Image 1 (spheres, rainbow, N blue to C red):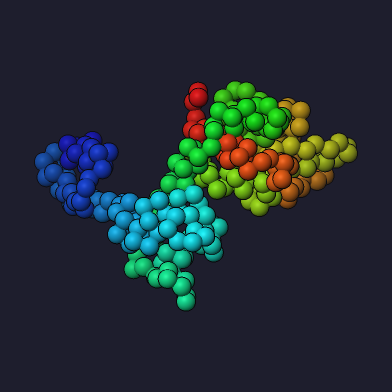
Image 2 (image 1 turned 30 degrees about the vertical axis):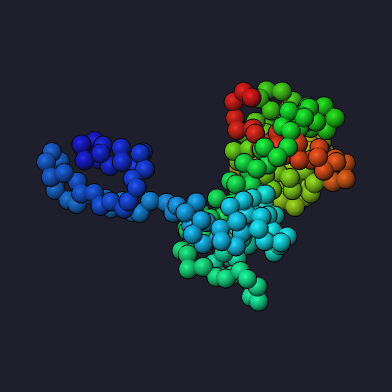
Length: 263
């Protein structure tokens, strides 16, 4: 690798503050122009401060029935819906459209989600949330965190890094609302009539691998199967109405805190 490329990678690692055009050095290896490094990612905090803060406030809670800092929106649930509102506004309301690029709008969405995650992690009592997870909530019957619990359901050791707080809460109270492909369960019936249900790990033309309800790894040639069916409902029970508002907040705070590695 030439010196010019090393400098380019170093600048990328440090995060250049302004758009820069790099040209490959003419010595030592070839005379063509080097790659063009585009502008840095949008500064979402600055975009929020300059375009949103006046109405929504620094914490995102200055508009009635909207609390951006805690993921509460009137008319949106998904990131795509929030992005659409940012770009196009809401007719007959005080929410105007914004002349953002799509990357800029998406960066603001991610900024709001990160704000909600930070607030969720401090809003509740994560220690109490852990006791619910490990105890009364019976979460370890299916889930595993840092080596403790079952492998029947998804490992949640890094859930706070992979999912936003609003998504985690939705999964607790309405697990059927969104089932990620990596969390799908299947029902297998072999040609001799045996039935196997479990969480899908992998499958291709020739074989399928699942973790069954006894935490056993099952690998089965597809040629031996009579039936291979995706289960369209989550195997997780809904905790809606089973946890108090504070218990739910504490549980979400604990799960948001799980970023991988020992706690």
